Amino acid sequence: MLLLFDIDGTLVCGAAAAHAEALHAAIREVHHVDAVSSGLVDPAGRTDGEIARILLLDAGVSAERIDALADEVREQCCRVYGTLCPPDLSHTVVPGIPELLIWLAGEPDVTLGLLTGNYEGVARVKLGRAGIGSAFVTAPGAFGSDAEDRAALPHIARRRAGASGTPYPRSRTVVIGDTPRDIACAHADEVRCVAVTTGPHGAEELSGADAVATDTQDLRRALASMLEA
Image 1 (cartoon, helix red, strand yellow):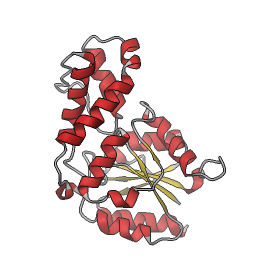
Image 2 (cartoon, helix red, strand yellow):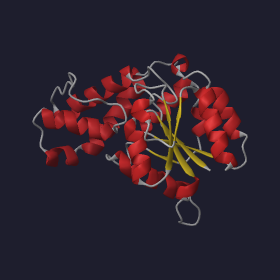
Image 3 (cartoon, one colour):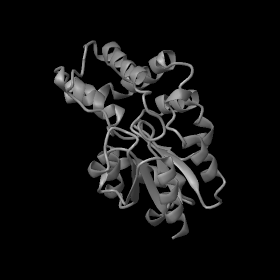
Image 4 (tube, one colour):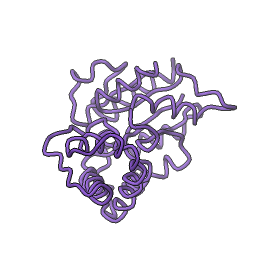
């Protein structure tokens, strides 16, 4: 089974401040505008590219210019994040996640993966400084660097996890995330989703998932049930 983990709100919580600052700094550097969100956009479940686009459009930047400079914004954001991110993010790891990852690493039929709206460079630094990056060093996945539309990410991740050019089977793929957008992207690719309430959304808002877990013990039970099926 391919398990595709979201990062913010799922693996870590409270690690977004430097990330947001880096994205805003990148927008200022590349587009020379101060695109402050001021409540304009809820970042939960969105890709970095989508957030940048919303902010830039609100600042009056044309879609054509946003497209033309998207790679520069990504590269600048990743570079700045490396300098702004605290050296130790271990306190942001959701309780029980290290133990869950150790258990899953010992399961012979499990492939761990990532599915996150973070640019890949940001994701790697964030997980590394949180102390759980080693679980995903060789893991396949999809990132905000790969597509601005989160709905495109599960297929990208399955393609990377597949063998001989064949995407990993939908029936054996599970997205694990904490927002309705995680659920929506899983449904867009017709794969299952386990939602967790460790982020900003409660169980009722996540009811569209195949299973809802309130903590990592609950998540372990849900995943064990799927592995046994």
